[in-house]
Image 1 (cartoon, protein in one colour):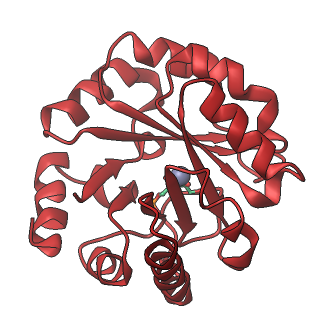
Image 2 (cartoon, helix red, strand yellow):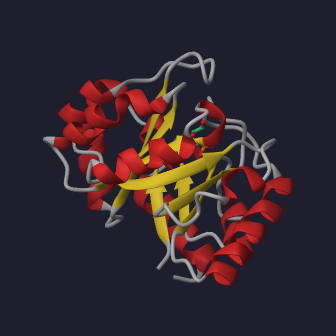
Length: 217
Ligand code: DX5
Ligand code: ZN
């Protein structure tokens, strides 16, 4: 089933309670939460403490995307904060397999992510461990960037590997998603679509409806 995951990075940081309610009221089930450390990416967002506070106000699936060096250091913190999915980058740790296993052992769903410049081969050996594969469709760090069309080929490759290996993880795309690019990503094999600036710049519900229409959902 297709899922639209509004990215809280594009929302009002001073008012997460209200923003979570606004997202929940649209009927979507996911919220995408971007964690940035100022090292893996230049930008700094927020950490597990903020996620724990958000948890008090929402029953949405917390889809946490860590753009953080050595994310294995924060597995317990995010589990305790109430994260449902913890997605980490292959580029961020020399121990990707162990880190993903640690996420599963902590009771969360495990996601693996790759940047636009990283080949699918870097995550092939962990596909049997994960619940979600995140193909970055922009270079991570900031919202509002243009979708990189070349990344679609990697979505196709991962979908093909999933079929060949008889696996059932979700394929998520993140960055530059609008009512045009979402259809391309779906056609390539994605089913979880993160969207930030496209959704929050106007009426949230109306914008989500345009994405649903593009998905024919
Ligand atoms: C970028 C983040 C994205 C971001 C997407 O590093 O991972 O989740 O919020 O924003 P848009 O949809 O504006 O590209
Ligand atoms: Zn993200």
